[in-house]
Image 1 (cartoon, one colour):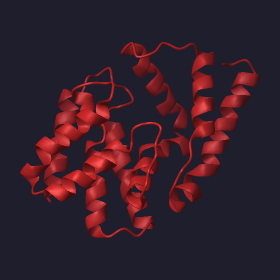
Image 2 (spheres, one colour):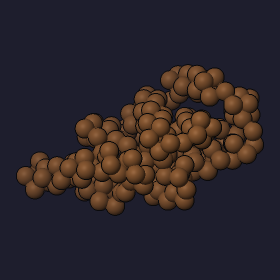
Image 3 (cartoon, rainbow, N blue to C red):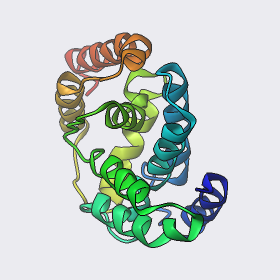
Image 4 (tube, rainbow, N blue to C red):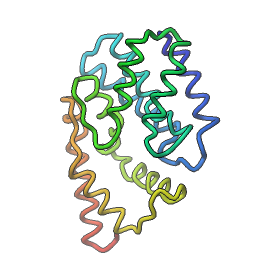
Length: 197
């Protein structure tokens, strides 16, 4: 299981093959999720093998964007199934990675600790200072790719609903991100009240 080699391979592909119009689902997002995954893996005391499995799943979780936007998780699993055997991954490891990719699909419904970690890593930004930057990158991506056009008030409503319903699952993410997520939610509500949305 050569995580470094497969990471070099896929990051190169994402940098050169992803559409420029993907302002949110970019190579930077993938790297961000890998970094969040590794932070959580350390804090949640995973084994080195579990960490490698999670890091690989984070690497591949949005790779399906190379193929399709809708249901990109399925395409991500297909890419992982095709690529990972070449880098020394066993079938049982690939199946575990496929499950971890699939569980990132919204709404998130993780059933075990590793699934909880990748779900929290994928939406780590909700509880960070750069939340609004990522939020507007997603809004731009939807508009440019004709996924959904929203007015600013509509976008803020979507964000309020999403943040209100979202939950972190791991002890680490709850401790590190939940309070800031709630403050971000309150800030959006204040913008709406002030009429800036």
